[in-house]
Length: 152
Image (cartoon, rainbow, N blue to C red; front, side, top):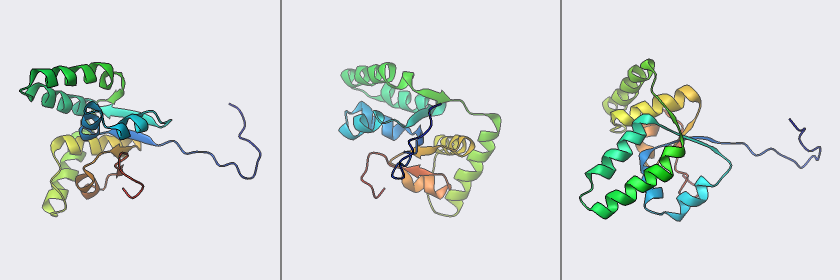
């Protein structure tokens, strides 16, 4: 591995490890230019098997055949090529606790899929890329909206 430059002004750029939620994938499927720019960064990207399924449920539920085909193509050409984490058995207990506590405390209404994604993010040290910051913050999960401005 090469040594870093010796200049006192050099600072290494940290690489963000992202775990992508379905709402960000939907933005990509809809052609959001912010998704395209972000997805071309040097950061590391992955998603989760549960998120792939969540995306595909939405695709197959759309009544418009042309939109279904667009969603299927986006999945095949983009999402299927992203690394994906399976849930480990312990993730289910963690997901239920995180989502249940967030609901009990009135801080959010995370779904089981949200809880499973949060459990994977916590286990792997990743940050969830999502527009649903409320529910993930309520579960104590590191999260950001990479498609929003610097204030997200």
